Image (cartoon, rainbow, N blue to C red; front, side, top):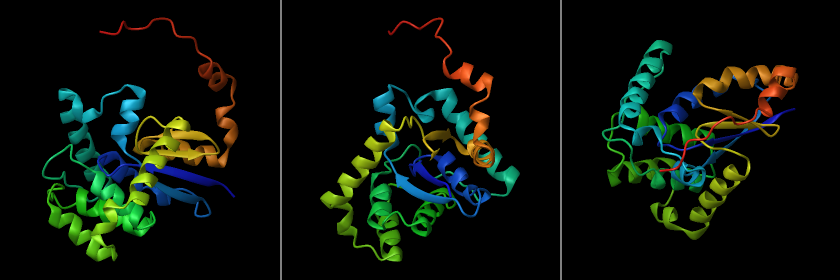
Length: 209
């Protein structure tokens, strides 16, 4: 039996689009959900998020809205984006990263056009999930989020959402098909071309500004 670790941040619309596709993976696959701080991943790898690049920001939002409409997934951008996802990540951890609780938080953020900065949204979700709002400031909750993010970095996770299966990362909402094929036949990552790609030399580097 395979197991998978799914790394995500509520700030990512692609994480929501991937979540609704996780049930396309084999039913016997055990998936462990790990909230991580996307900003921490970006800082470690020296990247900018899609919403931090003007043209890419608009494209990302349009692409996600199109994809959701195409495949019948409920989707409405929140009132503002990017937003501070820390309260929601901590709420998920306080709920023991329960998949049902995680889905409920995603739905509140990505299907209602609500304002993520509204404290009432966090408080309402906490009450619905039976979580004392004071738990969000608890040291163990903060430490768990920090450890999740550090673990993700150590495993080579550079973005969200990412599934890690048998040590292999599958990044993005569109990687579900790739992950499913890998589960059916792990040798697809060991073909001559896949091996060549893994050792491909770098021919040029941009100079840092």
